[in-house]
Length: 389
Ligand SMILES: Cc1cc2nc3c(=O)[nH]c(=O)nc-3n(C[C@H](O)[C@H](O)[C@H](O)COP(=O)(O)OP(=O)(O)OC[C@H]3O[C@@H](n4cnc5c(N)ncnc54)[C@H](O)[C@@H]3O)c2cc1C
Image (cartoon, rainbow, N blue to C red; front, side, top):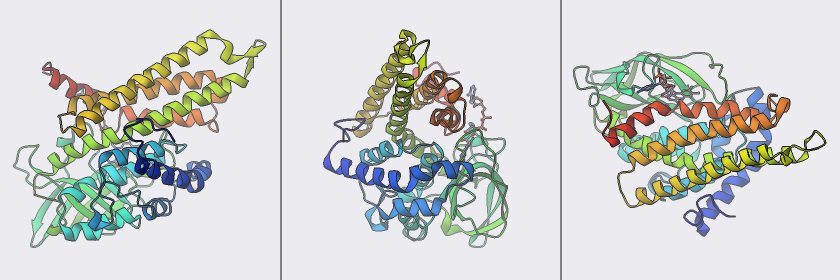
């Protein structure tokens, strides 16, 4: 089974992770996606338990809490397999569980916190969500207003979190909140674990989205939510920094899956255009179609090159912030190009919800917005170029 980053991810161990993941995806996920897209949300506990039982939710996490303790390349091998899930909503939900809600908990959380929340997230018994964004603060993460004040041994948290993936099914949220209202905006916030059944939490109805339709997204209100101060992850007021560190790994890990789904979409278009007769011959015989698909394939290969470069430098412990920002930018933009061009060659069929390319078109649109919009990536790149004002 060749890898997208062959030979980097192609040891026997990488292949075994991919094989295990693909077996679950083909048996327990892909056959149900149409149903889950129509009747959202997908059953996160059921799906995560399957993945957790196979060890796939804790690939890079510490062994003492049920993880495999492996390096990022193994998470990328899993990420590549996740790219074979035939929708964007479940990969996003898995990414929240493994790469957004739990890395800071694993790296900086106390043993007690890791035993109570990380271990069940790795085993798939708990669903996790991450609460960063707020109605008025998405790209500008430091502008969040949800705050925690101390009361005895507890924090009392007030505010609200917007567009929170997995939140209607989640057992806990890792929330970024202001803990020092008088401090600097990058050093006055903390990450705190909040069990979702804590009194004072209320949830909106599931938000109705353009794409990622099988995932659950909601607004979470927190009114005098009381949690023990020991639910703080790491040091107080370091939350913003922890969050920024975690963004780097998350943006690298999604690369192989994004390439897998682009390759799948291009291949599906070749298959369709080869059997679709138009003006007396298969659509694929038109040179304009051949050339556009060839151009997209070229772009995908260039993206793969950038991904390999990022990974090489990451493994050499170099500063890859600029390159990973370029990678995130390019993934979002190229997916949109692939989706748009491929849907075009499906004609009217491409516009039907039942056609996979139409789901792909709707789902990938998020990637230029969520987890750092394209312009946020351009801002980081500009800073590294010394041109940012
Ligand atoms: C389906 C979905 C799931 C999500 N899941 C989660 C989740 O689980 N947890 C969570 O915390 N958040 C989540 N989010 C929130 C997501 O991360 C934010 O939507 C994203 O960060 C953008 O923030 P915003 O929507 O407030 O847009 P804004 O910050 O208002 O930005 C609007 C637009 O302005 C432009 N822009 C941004 N910065 C600049 C700049 N410097 N210069 C020029 N233009 C700029 C961009 O085009 C951007 O799209 C989710 C969002 C969606 C839609």
